[in-house]
Amino acid sequence: TAKVEEAVLKTKVFDDESIPLVGINANTNNGVVTLSGTVKNNDSIPLLIKRIKTVQGVKQVISHLHISKEAS
Image (cartoon, rainbow, N blue to C red; front, side):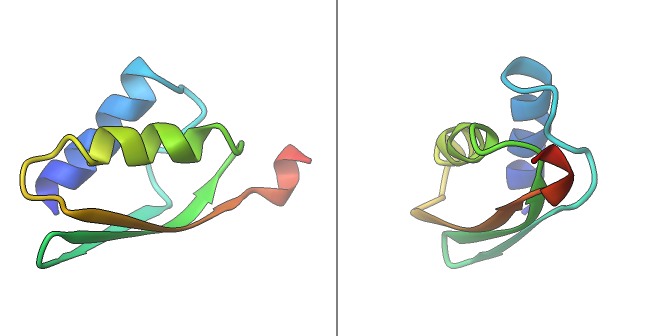
């Protein structure tokens, strides 16, 4: 989970500044990462998934991320 959280931080720094530092939860179980929480725009979700899939041992990423209503 720590490496996945690091990937979320790298996505914020390198790919999309709008990704919040808090509010995205990642749970891992046997190589399956489940993301939950809220992001500001729809473009953030594929960026997060792409970077998390690069983490060694990650087999699958399931997203339960939502777009913030404030962004609408």
